Structures are given as structure tokens and as C-alpha cells.
Image (tube, rainbow, N blue to C red; front, side, top):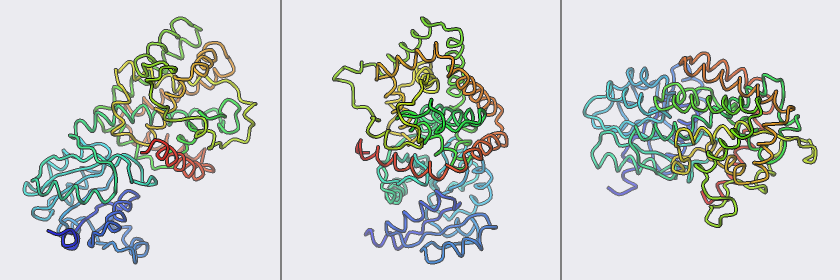
Length: 437
């Protein structure tokens, strides 16, 4: 079938018209697909009739209508709701259609598809490794072939190529393991930073301990996360069975390092940091075989939120970053192996840790500050406490508790969230151009 004929004949469907559903719908239309059927919860129908007028999307009243007429259907709903939504609309799927999901955790999604979809439909699912405010071009996208004919699989790939992303093919189990390895400690670190600053009633851009290149990126990525919707991160943490070991280990790493700091156990602390550094980064900073840093001064210094002069900067222990590398070492995770499934926050966190550990003077300053600078000790205590609180919430599987902690912290930073989200998007775009991503 000629490409034009295919795009005229095949009807695409999107169940769930949140930010990512809209991104996919617009991408499909921009790529020339003529029929994009969409729906959201019935209470939004009147609102969407107005907002989608002239968009080219065909708004339908519910998932039944989308499922019955579409040849390719994406469930773009929260991971916590995938079982319920597929149970409602899955049995009405058009004969021979392809069903896809866009959740960040694939094990419950695949289970829902297996339980509620007719045996005569194909299942090829996906995950865009970025949020809706990031241009999908050249970002990683995972495609998972669960059950399908070659023709259905190839059609799915052609449809998803509309987003112009870099496609990676994995199983759903590989996907969940890699996303846990890359995202769990990342999210926990940035979420805990925000909660710690809230607990101490401190805005980092007003504190001399949190100015400078590294702090610019930490603050921006924290604001970026809290400008998003809480369920984006809750699903991965609470529903991914591969996530719990890393969540627990990150908390253990923060706790172990913090105890060494307050006891000023220099030899043990230095030995632990050195072992983690050797495992993750290997080559010494002066080694010509070492690859270029993901982040650099010229990039990080462009994105300052603080008006405090750089010469007023106070030392920082960077406990959050030291603990990330210690966590990777303890779990024997090489983060560079997972760059094929990188998300923008993970890329930034890896860039920050790499910059810290491969800058000898900066790392020495962080170690000395951690062990002997009492001024930063209170902030580190707040970070330790915030981390424990997030881990306890996740261990309990408490979606309501997760939402409350997230939204309470987001409210504290409300006045800077929009600015932080815009600046972090520009930072991500700048870095992508710098590394050719």
C-alpha cells in the first residue's frame, strides 16, 4: 500500500487526552495521518469540543467509540488507571486492530491487555522517554512487541515514527528494569531536594550554598519535576516491581554517607566515595580515553535563577549526588549502559554526578565540606529526612500520600514553577544540541 493511501485509510485512536495524548495526536496529524479519533473522560467532552475545534482531531464521546472504529489505538492514561480503563473499553476493540499503551510501567499495562483485550487483536506498546513539554524529535522511544503479526508490527513502527524519536526495541520486562535503573534514584533525588528546601523554608536561589553551575541544574530539574503532574512519577515508583530495590538502596546510601559525615569518619567516607567513583566513572579525569562531559560550565552557568554573586557562593557537600553514585555502585548499575533509554532528568543527573566526580577539586571540596563544614549539616539533615519520608511513602504503596507530599512541595515553589519549567526545557534543548542528541 502506498504511504498516502495508508495514511488515508488507517484510523488512529487515542484514549486519554492529557498532555501526552495531545502530543501524540498533533504529531500524527503533522505526519499526514488523516483520521485521528480521540476521547477523554466524559466530563471533559464539552470542554474538548471547544479546545479541539479546528485541530483536525475527531473527538468522540468515549473509549467505546474510539475502540470500535480505530485500527490503531493508544491508551494514554495513568499507570494506576490502566487496568480499569482497559477493562472498560478493551472488549470492544475492533477486530484485527493494534492496541498500544503509553504508560511508564509496562508490567501492569501488559497484564491489563492480556486480561481484557480480545485474542484477535495485536499488542505492540510503546513509551516515549520524555514529558509532553519536550520536543520528541531525537528523544528515545521504546517499542515493545508483545503479540502481533509482522504486518501489524511494521504498521505500528510507521505510525510511531511520526514523532521522529530514536526508537529502541525491548521486551516489557527489559523496559521496566531499565527505567527503574535510570529513573527511580533520579526522581527520588530531585523530589527530596524540593521537600528538604520546603521543610527548611529555603528557596535555593536565595541561599549562597545553592548558587553556581551545578546548583543551577539541580534547582531547575527540581522545579521541572514539581511543575509536572504527580502521577507521572508516582506510577513508576509505586507500580514498577523493579523499582523497590533502587529506592531502598538510595535511602541506604544517603543514610550511610550522612552518618559518616556527622561522625566525621574521614577514612571510611573517602574509601566509599572512591570505590563508587571507580566503579561508575572508571577513567581518571586526565585520561584522554575518558569521554567528554555531558555538562560543562558554559552550559550550566547560562541558567542561573539566583541574583547572588558567584563570589558569595558557600561550600556544598552535594550529598544528593554522592549518594546517587554510591547507590549505582551498590546495585552494580552502570548508568552509561542505559543511555539508550535516557530521560531528560536522568541525563541531567548523570551529567551532574559525572561533572562532580570527574572534577578533582570540586569533588575534594564536596568531601571536605561533607565531613567538616557544620554550616551545611542542617541542610543535609533535611535532605536525609526528606529522602526517608519519600521512601516510606513509596514502600507503603500510598498514592494519596505520594500526591499530598508532591503537591504540598509544589505549592511551596509555585511562583517559580513556570519559569523553572521553561528554563529547564531550554537547558535540555541546549544539551541535546551540544551532544548531538
